[in-house]
Structures are given as C-alpha cells and as structure tokens.
Length: 464
Image 1 (spheres, rainbow, N blue to C red):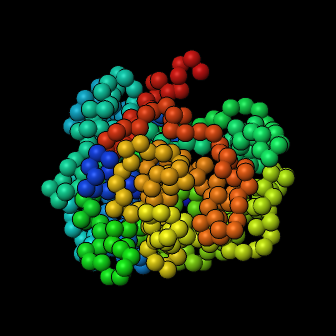
Image 2: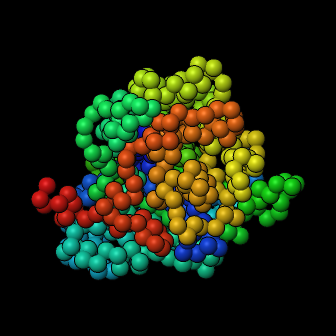
Image 3: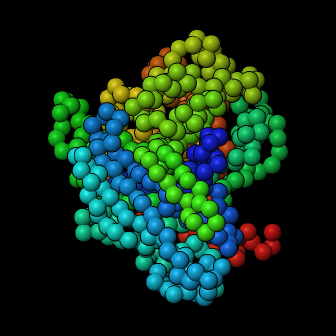
C-alpha cells in the first residue's frame, strides 16, 4: 500500500503511521495549495466501543521546503487533546450527535494548529474541534454537516480540517504481494504472448476502510519562496512536501488509575513523501531507519532508487515479457529517470513545459510546481498521461499512483534521460487494474476532498 504498515515498527503504532500524502494546487481555490496527510490506516468502520482517533501523545507535522535544501521552511503542526463528557459511561455517544458541542457525544477531540516559519512558531488556532467518527445513521444522522462544522477558515488565510475520512487509496494488495500478480495485466496479449497466471477481477483492498486526515489549504504566497535566486530557470514556484509523526523519547506506564506519561524530546517515528518509497524502494532491514531520518539523509538510499529491486523482479515474474528492461538491468546503469522523479524532481528540458526540480539535494519529497494550474480534465495517469498537474507533480487524491510507479519502474520513463532506449510494449500496460471508480465513497470536489467516512452500521453491507 502507499505507506500503510510499510515498516515493521510503525506497523505496531498505527496512531503515528502516515499512510498517504497529497499535495496539489486547489481546484476549488487555485490561489492556494491543498496538503493532506492521512494517519491511523486500515480502520474498520465498526470500531466501537473505542472508536479511532488521533494520538494526544503524537506530534503530527506537514513540512514544506521551498528552497531545495530538503529542510522545512514552513511546517504546520497539529497537536491533540481528548475530553470525556461523562466519565461514568462506557459509550462513545448516548444519543444522536447533531453538532460538535452535542452533550450526547462522550469523547471529543480538539487540536491546536501551529505554523513554524523563519525559525518562529505562530499559533494559528487553539482548541479546534474534530468531528466524531461516523458511527451510524442513528448516532451520526448527518455526518456531512458535522464535517462542514469541523472545517475552519482561519483569519490568517488557511483552511483546516482534522478528522475521519474514507480511505481514498486504491490497490489490489492481495494480488500484488502474491508474487507480483497483476490480474488484468496478465490477461493482455503482449508481444504476441498472453500473460495469464491467475484468474479473478482486481479487488481494492482498502475500500470501505477509513483513515484520520490532516488537511490544510494554504495561500500560495505562504508556501512559495519570496525571492527567486535561481537564475534563468525559476524554481521559486516549486515546493517539496512531506509529513512526519513524532513521539516523546520516553514513556512511563501508569499504575492502576494513573495515566501514562511521556517525557523527553520528540523523536520522529514516521514520515512520508512520495507514495510507495519506503514500501517498495527501501529494503526490509532499513525501513525503520528510514522512518526516523529527515529527507536530507536520503542519499543513503539512492542506490536502491538507482537499481530498484522491483525492476529486477519484473523480468523474472513475467519471463520473456520485459527483455529490454532485463537488458537494461544487466548493464547496472543507474536509473537516472527514477532518481529525478523521486529524489531531485524532473529538470527542465525533459518534458515540454514542465519541471519540478528542486536542485541537487537528493530528498524524498512530493515535489509540486505550484505555477501549473489544476487540470480541467484530470488524467489519472498524471504526467505520464500528459496531465502536468498530476503525480509526480505533487499528488491528487484520484491519481493512479500505483500504475504510474509500476510503469516508471518497468521503463516507461527511461527515454526521458536516454533517447536511445525503447521501453518494452508491456511497460505501458502494467497496472493493478483499479481506479478512483473502485473507491466506494466518492471524492469531494471541494476541501477536504476525501470522501465521507464509512459508517459502522452499513459497512460492510448487511448482505455480505
């Protein structure tokens, strides 16, 4: 999955596990950028009596680098507190929750939002309310209204939301991790051969599951570099984005009725930039290490981008289908195309009218050229589909990042840096066979864009 349970240790700590990150120029407000970071993945909707929430002991942050050094120039920090209305009830709610201040809602969560820039912390808001979890039609009869109440427009220009949403990531997880089975791809005739190893239609493994979402919509003037010092090629409109979660260094377990306490400095336990980076690129033995490091240390992992394991596996899993990729792998030439896409951004001159390069620093960040306006007709394959407003130029909620990443690894993007290379015919067809249409909860056209979370009464359907 994009980053759901992608490393051994963070899989044990879902409250701090970043599962997806999105960054795009807002179609509902083109003078702003929308940043979305999801946490607490793989939530079954029927989560009572203790429903899902953010961690009061976790520091959540969304970072923005606007000068290409892999260090945050702007950070939005979310910190949470939980309040219990009725300490003598075991119930999450004792009646319908029709407003954020409902007395029927027993366990409320609030957060502060801090903007860190120029070395200074600016508290933008205190005690903003999260919506409840979507319990069911009797408990949360108008969930969309509760979400609107929990969407705040701040006097400083930001719009913010923190709370439960439907997971919008789509992937045929069971097939992919069954030795690289790509169900629809295997039924294609490629190079005169029919690829067929397993029957069945692709299944979206994350459908009808929820996440907890941090979403902030920021005026472009607050994320772009103020002055352009890069000469003829203007990088002032390009930003790099990643999210992180941190915990305090020591935790003291409570005794009896006493609460646990945490002490010491905050230590990063999770981070996420490009989808699938830690999931597919970083080897098992170093995944936990990667989660603790800042993007400035990603040069340590560049060799795994230069020669990705999956590129070597495709010719093995599909014998005779990827001969050109196999020959390229055997040359041991570094994959300059993947280094650009994942670690530096794509420089000018490779794709007409496009660049999101941030310089020589190798750092895993979602790079977004904020000068490119939202597409009137978005293509789910993003830049590979000729839509310069999509992944890997940032990431929109409906972008098919799994297919894009698979096709890039299979060799589709090699001609960007090697005009003499012709990809295998199969490379442009690699796909798990899913799209945004396979997400049951439809995406929204406006902030916060992810769909209404699934409720526990109707999901899974009673007929299942």
